[in-house]
Length: 129
Image (cartoon, rainbow, N blue to C red; front, side, top):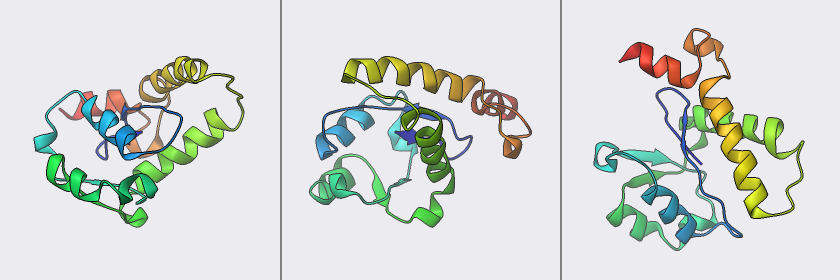
């Protein structure tokens, strides 16, 4: 999952059988927009980044693994886990993907945040542009 630090919007998600460099690359590749405008993204420096560190640095963008700099993403991960992952059981990856797509739509377009003046991530972004 990649989260826009500006408005907390989930901009892209990929799922797979394992966390891997390939999953990260596939996720980054599916982001709509110009990644050259992004100077850095934050990560928890999980194992999926260990083997691909230089590949990510040279092919995509520099990354840092400091959770304190990543409060919006960490908050999003917590919400995703408590609101979506923990209460549900997914029998297949396809079932997860279908329900996750619905959740992300709700999260971005219907879930309001007090820190964004009681707006959704999408409406906050639109109101500031």
